[in-house]
Length: 130
Image (cartoon, rainbow, N blue to C red; front, side, top):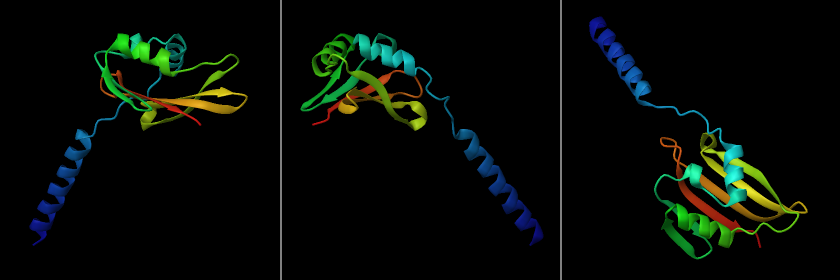
């Protein structure tokens, strides 16, 4: 009986260590300044590899780099004296939200979802604050 308990205990410990080794941790996203600069220039070149989702109002598309930049120019309005500030981040920094503020009032929010494995853009979601 004692041998069976020892064998079961060893198998549980072995299984637990294998499961722990399969969990892969990714470094935090550290390109906040580059992402902010890309937004201000309406140029997602550093973050686009192939295609990404673009969502705003009734527009939901899978787009390439050229179309992404055009859609950002069309739907992101940076009024005079407005500020672009980081509003939040989650998912170890791989989901970034920036806000466009004028007189401390949010005009719109832009959420970027970035792939942890490739570090490339998966989705851009623009939400206007009415």
